Amino acid sequence: KAGVTQTPRYLIKTRGQQVTLSCSPISGHRSVSWYQQTPGQGLQFLFEYFSETQRNKGNFPGRFSGRQFSNSRSEMNVSTLELGDSALYLCASSLVQGNSPLHFGNGTRLTVT
Amino acid sequence: ELKVEQNPLFLSMQEGKNYTIYCNYSTTSDRLYWYRQDPGKSLESLFVLLSNGAVKQEGRLMASLDTKARLSTLHITAAVHDLSATYFCAEGDNYGQNFVFGPGTRLSVLP
Image 1 (tube, rainbow over the protein chains, first blue to last red):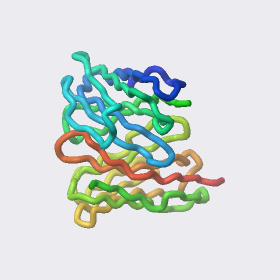
Image 2 (cartoon, each protein chain N blue to C red):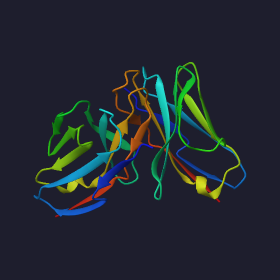
Image 3 (cartoon, chains in turn green, brown):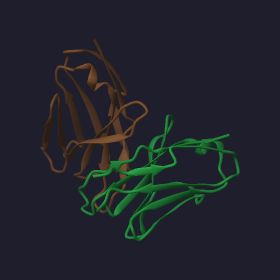
């Protein structure tokens, strides 16, 4: 069974630009979550989607947005990039059941210059 | 505000030794998870603990959960170099998939 796939693996952007990251969950997983990982703040929850609806949202500004498609694939978008947005962005999928662990992708390393 | 704390944050130990990583969480959630992250890699699920007194073991790692104390432990028995990684505990809420992660414990097992 294929794991969670994130593209691209690496991105370099300039302040003020916007970026879109993509995530394909494990087949059969309908919940997709996004996390930001930085050395200073650790792992922080961005949002979670299920059946194309955002169910939970973390404490991030509105520049961070996401969506989920009917095939459960998800994208997140960051507009007006800031230097502090440089991070590893991790996508995770899980089964519908609330007790299921998250299965993480390899992440997208975003560098903002 | 949900908060998860881990202790210690850094751990350097010799092969063959035993040690315990502690995870304190702030709510009455009964869902606690442990993950492992190798340098430059993603997170891998290790254990899912769903009730008070739950104990799970895999190889040299054993995790337990005390919901009354809001404490989970990850015990390492006879450490080997391959266990070197960062270990995260995470608390899951009871309604969805909103997980709060601890800061991680970076473990180095020295030969």
